[in-house]
Length: 328
Image 1 (cartoon, rainbow, N blue to C red):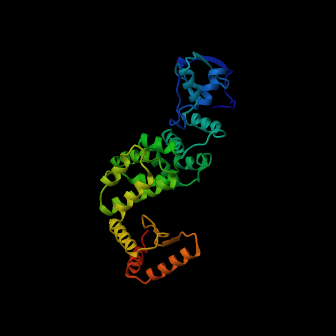
Image 2: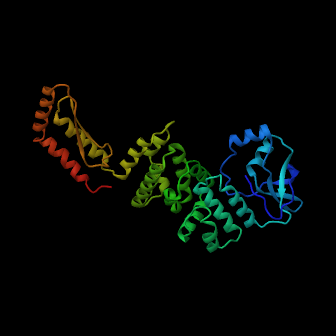
Image 3: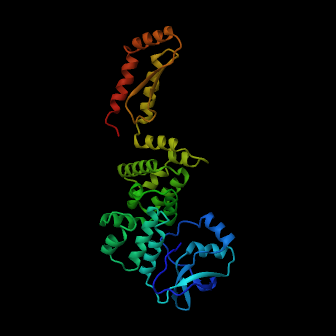
């Protein structure tokens, strides 16, 4: 929405919707919020849209969402303020940004779209860095500018889901070097899992690492049978996906699990004594838990545990975990 008045504006007028063209905004990713729709439905458009003349028609500078809702509600005329002189594309973008930033929080994908549009308007990199990046609450750095331009070049479907999940660019930066086929698979994977920020970073980096090690594309990693078995489920769980991904990342994982299970079985512990290991061997420690109700039960478990500590089975279990030290 636009809230300020500008020099060079005429007074408020009512203009037919058919004479207005939708403008470029900082974001094409969000549909208008329900609260705005309900407000316009019950009270009409209270805040005028801002236009600039383009030939025989008017171009929107601010108010795209109100314009879309007005069309959906079959409102034929809307209140507008019109800049009496034509306004450059850069100025339109700047006005839009200045007037929306007080009441909107932009995702990194939206910021990237805005920076990309400035570039298209012919704004040079130094001016984007010095003038616009601070307004977007970004560090004014060339490397960051290039990252945001790379974000803007990602496929639209992928940008849409990254915007919906509000993912910071640093989390998906690994995607900048993936080929188009791999980006398609990344989008499908992210849509299926909808992982949190840390889980997304972890999975993307592991897939990238495996692809580099095997000299294959990330797409081929994602299409592997183990991962597709999880992703094809109606509601895939990230924990299952992570376990499958780890088994590809560490091919020896399944054999290590079998060794641990066999060693635990050979220990023949008391029923109240539980030895637990990290399922995916990301941690190399072993936990012992004791469940008891009486002192005799506690003493019995401690005695049995002491005896078990001297066995070859316990030595095998500890040796298996010692081998894991140094694994990421």
